[in-house]
Length: 381
Image (tube, rainbow, N blue to C red; front, side, top):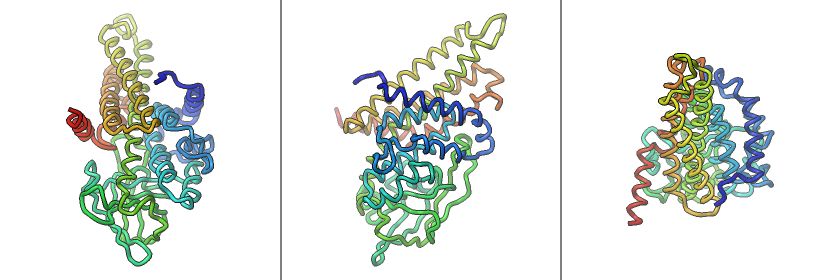
């Protein structure tokens, strides 16, 4: 495995960093305070090709792979973590999912509008009584003639309040087994489909989160994504890649914490010298830098394994578990280094702390990641 980024990946990193510095950094505090998704910036991301890295060229993408998406997501999260989260849903959970399991007609219809930034997508798995317990969903789709009728609700769904398209996971048969799941592609405006108000959240505030309601929603068989009753198998393939990218959120936030802390430690003078000359501060910075490098290196390995077609279930869980905890620790230390100023909205580290915490909850809690890892370890003994 080559630990150096390729020339192509370095160019992508430089390009997306310039984009973030111009388009996101100046408005980061504002959109967090207003809880406003920057749609104009999202459209520009599409126009610049940053939303199509996991999409084949024939459907409007660049097909540059998961590592390119990791780099883009990390840089977005370094500026505005909430933006990275919303973008990843569109690029991975929607476009990539459809490019892998959709029909040719579905690919032609749905991928290009999202990859170009014209439309925004959501992915509906979590329900009020089924979070980490994904097999426990209660949304049902029953076959009625030539169509399906869907009833149920989804919650904590990224982009739901503003999405044009939705992929939702339902039960078409069985109960609490990996068999019997079916995925559907839905469109805003369908009779029986509605979304709730945007949730008020601790962090990731410019990424709109809400509910999806399906009340006798009738859809044709053409809206089935993948195989009827085999939707969980398709879904878990995509979720492994999502877990690999979850580390990108954490490393992006942690990198922002580290850079802000180094700047402050150089500039803030106490007792006649910069606080960066004190050993306690140096110790925190040393731990930050070390843990970020470890988290990023292992996350890159997981992405490499995925691109080699190798299973990554427990490796992705390890990457997410370590990186998300590391990001919270980096954010706490960044606030501590900034002292009283770190507690003020005038400085960005309080936002980094609020954003970092979601990594230990969303996309499978840290406790669930430990279960996944432990089961793999026990099977190998």
